[in-house]
Length: 445
Image (cartoon, rainbow, N blue to C red; front, side, top):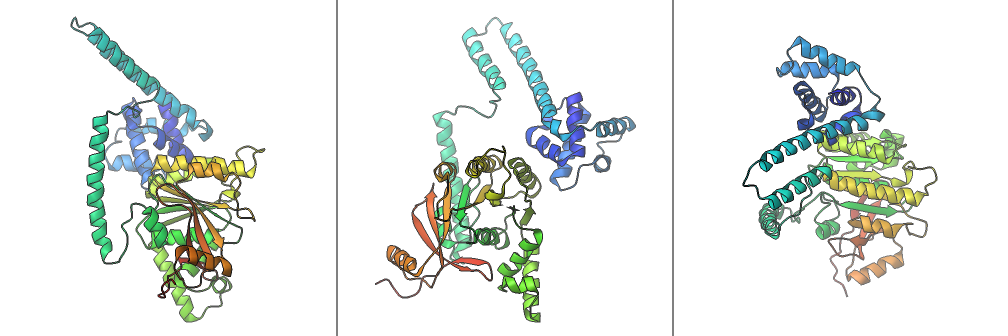
């Protein structure tokens, strides 16, 4: 029970410990009744956004009638006071898991000892079942099983039926607006959304752009589509801007008032009112930002898990990887980038969220280590400025005329869609707004 109490103490005193414990331990892995109840209460408090301190725990437990005995209160107080450094939390969590596994082992031994004492036991079948159970326990393979073809076929039928019903409902909802039903979080760019049906859970999307060419503007316009214009919660992590800078950019994006006017304060009364109304729209959104210049992969993991637990986020935006701290001092920048990309893909899959990662392109538009990153991601995009000659070439290739545009998205890789596609963009830098260029009425000749 010492390991259990050390974990609970860590949860009451450290947010990092709390996140790790909730992520890795199940309440059934606690052997002591009181410890199990305390773990459930602490987890529920944290998920609701309340810091799970000793005081909050006692209040919650008393209200629910789960902590009533004076003896239990005394035990919990001792647990809270026996705080360990959160650097050791992983050790104690593993101790709890191993103890739970030992109890499962004893249970299996008793089960198979009883079977073995029966005279009609099929020894070959007995050995097969026992070895399978013990191997699964040893390898933590409880959720890793080999499916039968019948199970996969049944699953396929179930998924198809669910998808058809979901699509028809979405199609009906979208018909009035002339939209395409999304499977994931929309980007706000019609052609891109039509190609991908949105950023789906487990997707890793990489956007590359050169310095000063709209990485953050792109990220915030995607955020606008995802959580202001649609009901999704997102986590936006910025490694180079302050809270104030992020807030000002939102004012420009949502109000159509130039950013430099918001920064300087040179607003008319009408403009000021428009900006205030823009912030009131943001107030009702699902935008959860975090400005953290000294971001590490470990901090990123904790932040994402916290946001998933407390806010049920659907999208993580990392703006941008170039400012991430190195895991090892001698790592090159592209090695750091490659490592972060791999960890972000795992994060997307484990948390069942979409991840959008912004990276910086070299002056010639290339990205070092790009091939390795392409292998990890589901969608790789580049935001590239366009010259007059470039506009003509894009229109010739697409056989369409567009309003004047100054940037394009180049789809370098798309796992579930066509790659090598250019999407014309209009980047209004004063207002920090990016939208897809509209096709003009004149036909292609």
